[in-house]
Length: 71
Picture 1 (spheres, rainbow, N blue to C red):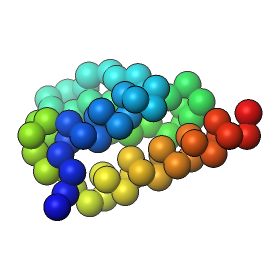
Picture 2 (picture 1 turned 90 degrees about the vertical axis):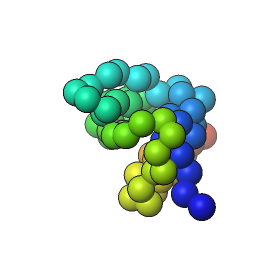
Picture 3 (picture 1 turned 30 degrees about the vertical axis):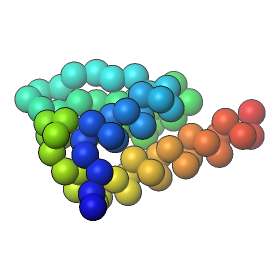
């Protein structure tokens, strides 16, 4: 079962990402350690997240975890 948009937003918030509203239902998420890899999430909190978005969030969280381990 796919995750909900609100779950992805929660994961990003817990990891220290900063939220910035964008046009319409879009939100823009950045992290100070990886500013060159922002995540854009579109949709309402109750919507099912597309597979590509789940994969993108998981990849950026793994990259952040590796960076934090190195420092």
